[in-house]
Image 1 (cartoon, rainbow, N blue to C red):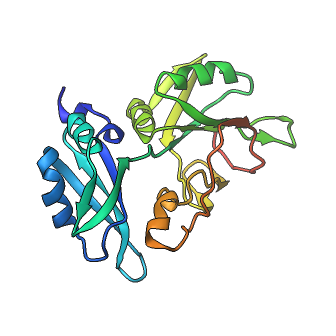
Image 2: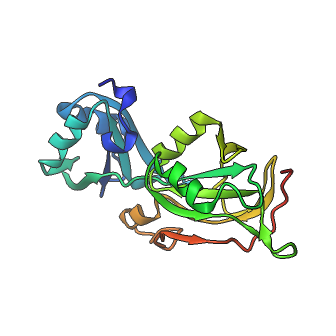
Amino acid sequence: MEPQDLSDEDRKIFVGGLCWETGEVQLKEYFSQFGEIESANLKLNSVTGKSRCFAFVLFKDTESVSKVLQNTHAINSKKVDVKRAKAKPGKVFFGGLHPESPSEEELKEYFSHFGNILEFEIPQDKIKNERKSFGFVTFEKEESMKKVLKVGKVSLAHCELDLRRANPKIGRMKSDYYYYPSHSYYPDYYSDYDYYSGNGGPGGGGKMKSKVQSSTATPVSPY
């Protein structure tokens, strides 16, 4: 299997507890003994530019990750915490729904072919008392979202659905299709790791929940 066919999540490790002076070059030098490295990403403080004392290393293959996890590690004479990187979720916008079709069950069944679903939602029009013509699906892995985006459009229950990436940033976002107060499913993907830099994390360590709900947003859609 070619490296590009493998999921990034399966080939990536998290490295925490790093010394302030440890850089990406040292990370590559150390972990290259376990296999070929595609990239090393040291996380920096956006204000000071200093290391947040954790990083992610992406290998060319999954076998290298297995080798790393079988050992304990020390870099710059400091023991570091190494584990598989957690999967980053991905959120998709789908537009073009009819008032009653496709059904919620048909939509879930279709999207489930791409991966595990964390959350599914179709906003409701409170005035018309019917669902709006678009919705969102959040996958457990960003890789699943990427597969959906490659499809672009799909015909389902006589509806031509437009599939696009939903903007995950906090705040009121504008797109070509709608206005909506976007949900912070992952306000900071790295917040769970931030205790390594001693600041507790900007996201407050909130946990994602798998649920089905109707949003109270009031989007505007051309559909």
